[in-house]
Image 1 (tube, one colour):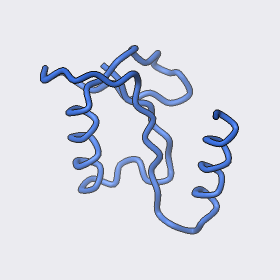
Image 2 (image 1 turned 30 degrees about the vertical axis):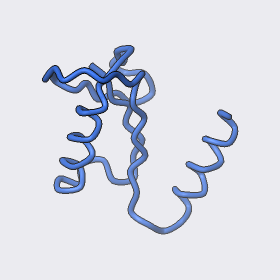
Image 3 (image 1 turned 60 degrees about the vertical axis):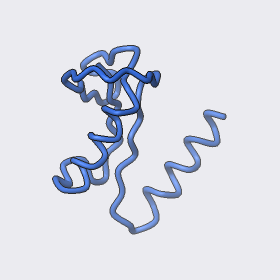
Image 4 (image 1 turned 45 degrees about the vertical axis):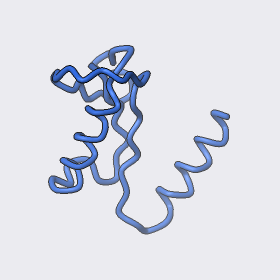
Amino acid sequence: PYRDHWRQEELLSQSGLEWTILRPAGLTNSRAVKNVKVSFDGNPRPGLTISRLAVARFMLDELERNEYVGRRPTISW
């Protein structure tokens, strides 16, 4: 499965499109409101979980901000 993920990411990154690959930590159904930690290559060290709600909010915010275009952030709490 990891090889497939890597291949998908490589195809997307070479597509000429504007893209952001979001890598969430373990998903929960929590409704808690917490700050999202954004990590690249394990720095800072990501947390173990994040809620589906927080991922959805992050994605919607990113559509407006375009802060991570062409990047692969890991998000967690």
